[in-house]
Image (tube, rainbow, N blue to C red; front, side):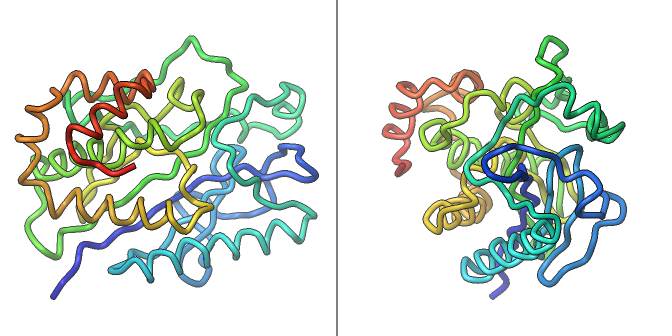
Length: 263
């Protein structure tokens, strides 16, 4: 039986002795030409190390890919005396460090993402500290081998991601700065194979339990997509977005309880 395929392209801060530095010029690879490694690829994204994993059809494979490509990245960083910084999803850099890092430290991805609820392009906020950098833990959900991919189906899957992953992430993710730039409710990109859910930070990368949570949530978002209307009726589309965007832990806990989502 064919399974939903789950991938990811996490971003990570790098540094040494608890000092947050940049990956610029150390990793190689770009979004257009990533650096191939076993089970995926590496690249530099602004000041961050980003890595892409091969799509996985099981939790075992997903966990192997997440950990395996991360280890490849750590090997590359170790050649320069650096390592990834665990459990860090946002950081305000010193301006001098970013200026010394060169032009790449000021270049952000230009491809827009969308709000799966409103069908509108998400615009980058302007009134944010320009030294703030954030790290995502996006989930890619592949179902094009199971059915024809349509924008409607992709949006439905992303809305279910908000319910199954976005709402509980308000309780699980300790970071409260990333949403100033990225990771609002329903953040997505349409993909030929399915959809990319861009709301989550990288907080789930360093725990076996949370890796399983992210994988299983992505699978369930597709497999339970027919439940969207009923779940949405309990909470309301605007309330779901508000809870995720404001990080309201009290309302997130109440919504998860009403919807039967374990946290």
